[in-house]
Structures are given as structure tokens and as C-alpha cells.
Length: 67
View 1 (cartoon, rainbow, N blue to C red):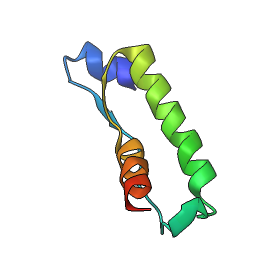
View 2 (cartoon, helix red, strand yellow):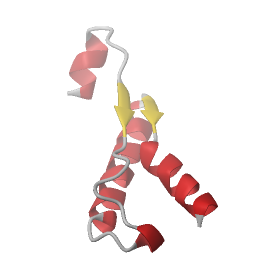
View 3 (cartoon, helix red, strand yellow):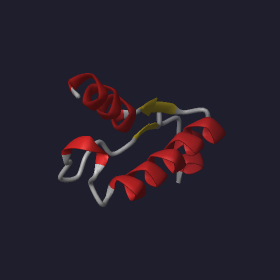
């Protein structure tokens, strides 16, 4: 899909998920799945040289600062 969009001169920007019912102290059962998904999105941006909005990373940085 990314290649199709880029072939039509569409600027592709991918975004990682930020949170799903986040809990403190990194104990959210979905954290592992969200982190895996974020890694896939990061890989795709690297492979296809498109832009990334990494909300997952930003949320982790904010959570660490709050703790």
C-alpha cells in the first residue's frame, strides 16, 4: 500500500499507537502488543523512507518523566 501511494506522489506518514487504557508502572497487559506494533511501524518507515510520528516513544518518555 505504501508503494502504491508513493507511486501516486502521496506523501506517506506513519504513526505508532500511543496508549490503550494505560496504567502506571508499565503494567498494562497491552504494552507488549503495542510495542511490537510500534516496532513494525518503525521498520516500515525505515524500509520505505517515509516519515514517522512516534507517539509510542513520546508517551514512554512522558511516563518516565512523571514517575
